[in-house]
Amino acid sequence: MAEHGHRQSFRILVLNEISPRGLERLPADRYLAGKDVGQPDAVLVRSADMHDMEIAPSVRAIGRAGAGTNNIPVAAMSARGVPVFNAPGANANAVKELVLAGMLMAARKLPGAMRFVAGELGEVRGELDKAVEKGKGAFAGFELAGHTLGIVGLGKVGCLVADAAIKLGMNVLGYDPDITVDAAWSLPSQVRRAGSVSEVLRSGHFVSLHVPLLDATRHLVSAANIGLMPQGAVLLNFSRQGVVSDEAALAALDSGALGAYVCDFPSAQLLRHERVICLPHLGACTREAEENCAVMVAEQLRDFLENGNVANAVNFPAVSMARESAYRVGIANANVPNMLGQISTAMAHAGLNIHNMVNKSRGDMAYTLVDVDSRVSEALLAELARIDGVLSVRYLPA
Image (cartoon, rainbow, N blue to C red; front, side):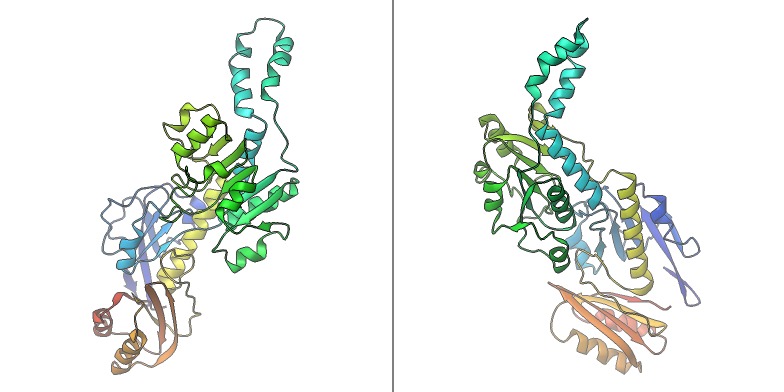
């Protein structure tokens, strides 16, 4: 990062193709963004695996143009005081529409019907109408209206799926032990609340999963509980590979307990089964979703780099403070006692008057923004960095 007077310029390493609409949010007079940028202040990424990548010490933030961050070493970045931003909800409508498509494909047996048309019918010579009438009976399906959809995970996608399903005449049962206030407000009142994953599995003719892949959610649906689903039920996984045990899903399909498994994550095992509907990770693959994700994460990166504000970081608390001074310091530190006291004492010893301050914590991480009334010296920044528990210090002159 370089200073020109009071204005800073920033270098952004872009690891994947990012929508131009997002990159436009990083003005060229202050930002250099590209795939070959050295000593970057931040990284913009979509699907590139960063776990084995050497992440430069200059990196102060990582922005994921999407929701999941399992391709980013979040814990290692937290230890360095580096926030990892994502774009929750930006691709929610795209995923919602694909979930609806998945339900319809399974209910109306469309993949098999399409294979029939492309295969057997393609070999018919003459009297095609008779062949159609004779063959179509194998693909008689059922309508969505009146059936129950169980949803595990009531974030932005889960709420949109619930709303769409209700409008299609379905009954909806939802479960999310960690539902946010915003999600609760946006959830349609007709959604019945379940008390557990097991209750959703027992009740749903369709069950759709919308949870991140964590240790607690790995094989959330497994051999231990998949048998709870009603005979012929449809399981949909558009969240993450690993949330469902492939082995358990295949065994349930083979036994006839499960009617169909629809997922966005192909594996060699799944591709061999005729009642598995696998899509090639299309959840966020729409022009609109890619643009929305890129715009959202670029704006979050910019606000952090220029002002230190944090929104939608998976490892930092949300912190926003309007500027009341041209001189600002951002400090990430371990969430332990007396950090604020040590920070303010160091500033007082440096002769700085604190104009405004905000401090928030999230788990083991705390983050502080401080506006002071005069220029901050390199010596003070070095002293703050030496405080035991401080992970990163940034000077943010306006």
